[in-house]
Length: 144
Image (cartoon, rainbow, N blue to C red):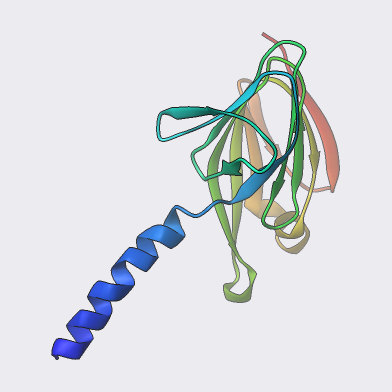
């Protein structure tokens, strides 16, 4: 019994760590951009991690590119704000989900494995509606 409790105690931090592991990384940045997670904003640089719950922002004259674990690529134009609302990528277990909210700006989206295996598991919410991903590439612009 003692060994089982110890094993559970040792595995508990791993579960928390896995839940807060990066879902993607900044691959390109031009100009002023940031990644905020749990209320802390950092300047976006190549290699900056992106988590479920992260808010990605670009300033005027800036752009940002992010590649997610499933090889989804999102590129953002100037004055853009997008929140990664949820991300689950466990294809071996059939658990796939990618949700985001584009508040303003422009997004160029190229789908990865999640959209190819389960297209209805991907959605992007905008102020006027929700985009359900059924193809592999699209561009959306949300005006202010």
